[in-house]
Length: 139
Image 1 (cartoon, one colour):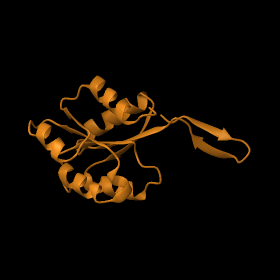
Image 2: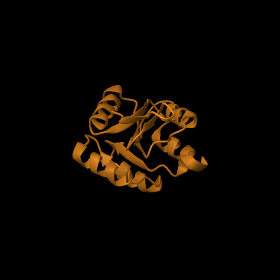
Image 3: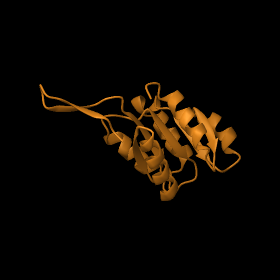
Image 4: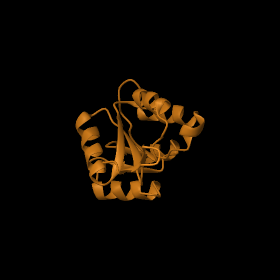
């Protein structure tokens, strides 16, 4: 859900108070459910099926997300490899990552990955929303 206002002097549309979150998860049900949940809470979302698609999408966007929600186990490019490549890419390196995973070792891995947080699956949506609001200061 985006909030927009039209500037009549230039006939230009601007986003007001929009916060963009990227969800990277190979499970379409999880990805789409999270996107819908966040949109219902006033966030703009971007989805990606794996780390490779996420990097490609981030490379094309003129407005990067305030946060990336990242699953670890995915085909093509897993979450760890995505994070390594993200940290090598200047402006993208500053985007915080929240790791979501059902694997117990993710609690340890998220620190090695320099992730902002780890939330175990199944997700507690209240916790997820709190973490997103903390990381996206204007949200």
